Length: 287
Image 1 (tube, rainbow, N blue to C red):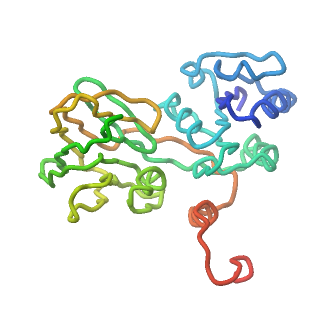
Image 2 (spheres, rainbow, N blue to C red; image 1 turned 60 degrees about the vertical axis):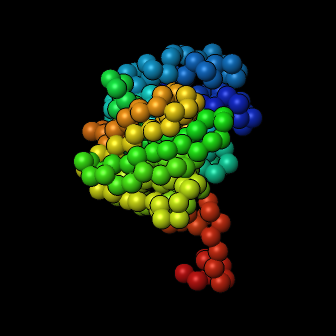
């Protein structure tokens, strides 16, 4: 790994403290460091700054430093290039960015010495008309600022499933099952699985429940509402308005996102720590 790119959330106070130091540490190990342009304002030393879109073409590794949102941003720019992402958590929850600052250099040294595993995460692709979008976490269809219910028609491949009024619907990957989908009552799915999770948002029907469908299926959603402020959001970061009778077709993307696992922590340990799951006695004492 000769060229290392950094995508950083410049709004995090810790980012300003660590970014220049991290660049120096990498350069001392004979790595060429390229920094996304949005982080240039917090640098204390000169660095090669390029557009985020160009990072994937010039880097062998990308460090995403922030929270899960920063890693999702990195995944959007990495796309199908196959460049692995090393997530560093300087945010709050951090399901995807499990490396904290205290262990940054030890874990990054392991990566530079090829002591790591690659965790391949499923990606979803949505088609709206001629436009295509990809999500590592989820696609969300919801009523915008009006907060009124919208009517949605759901199909799995060619099979009609149901139509219901709701605040919206979330179509998530297993990775995204612990994000907005979980907060809306959806199931937790092991990220190693391949599946599509459909979670309604506050449906006005007691019979509507979240579903987990086969990854080879296509999920088709038709927006039946007449309002013009229905929103389609990709990974909570980018979005657009949807007119009535818009058809969204969602399926498994051909590519996956490579996340670097330099820390021996299981998915269930992450759940226990991040969600504050408890039990009788201390876990460490019981094992």
